[in-house]
Amino acid sequence: MKSTLPTCIEICAGAGGQALGLEWAGFQCLAHVEIDTHACQTLRTNRPNWRVFEKDVRDFCAKEYRGIDLLAGGVPCPPFSKAGKQLGGSDERDLFPEALRIVEECQPKAVMLENVRGFLDAIFEDYRFKLKNQLADLGYVANWLLLNASDYGVPQLRPRVVVVALRKDFVRGFYPPMPLLDGKRPPTVGEALVDLMSSDGWEGALEWAQKANEVAPTLVGGSKKHGGADLGPSRAKKAWAQLGVDGKSLADRAPQRGFVGMPKLTVRMAARIQGFPDEWEFSGGKTAAYRQIGNAFPPPVAKVVATKIKESIHPEKNAKCA
Image (cartoon, rainbow, N blue to C red):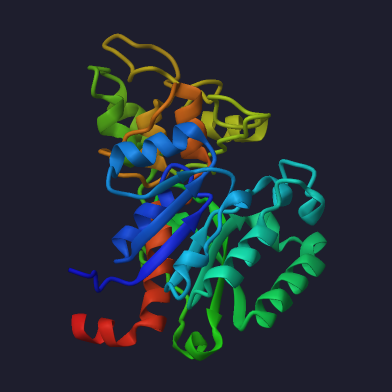
């Protein structure tokens, strides 16, 4: 029987953070495109029925998906990140041009592309203006949303920019997501991780959790060229240390009975900080797994944006569900 769910395709899928959010929002994703072998295996392990294309997005043709509801993706962040040289369109890793090509090929009702906070820096004003005009030429009205993951229940600040572009006939029905916490604070690092920190018998877990009483700084996954299984540059490690976490590397397991000192995060702890469900498995070694987590779009944030897009392009389905 043909599915009645709204459809999408996803480029630069990574480890499935955005894909999970799309799934939770009620989208049926017809294709996930990702170049990294470990990330593709993560997707296949957790969702064997997903159609995963392990290839460079430059080699992906979307013509067979013409007329889908949504094109989503997390195009590479390094061209716009303050941690890099901020080369923007001059960076070979800039895939916004490929996203535009795919928009033209599949002509979706809406587009949702995630990137770093640096995308809104003044240095990229001309880039944003050009992108907006290119989308307008294709029939879309584009806007940028700046969202903090902590406003949606994720125990991490993680400011992210989401480019939302809707076909002109759907623009009037789109409303940006409001913070879900409604003035309440998100879970602290201690509240989010105390059960995992105590899982191997560490007696100091409760005391540690009381001191880890803020949301986490932004996780930094790094790239294949730079970054490993640590929690980011010196500034990030210092912020983690203030929460009682040693950010110099990741641990293979939780602290054991009798542990003394500053604990490290495990891969599972990092995944929970990013908003992944505990049952989501990551393929590859510790460095590969952490890189997938650190570069992900938190699923709860992807869900709220995708839900708002779905409400704008399928108001009749939302009325039936109300």
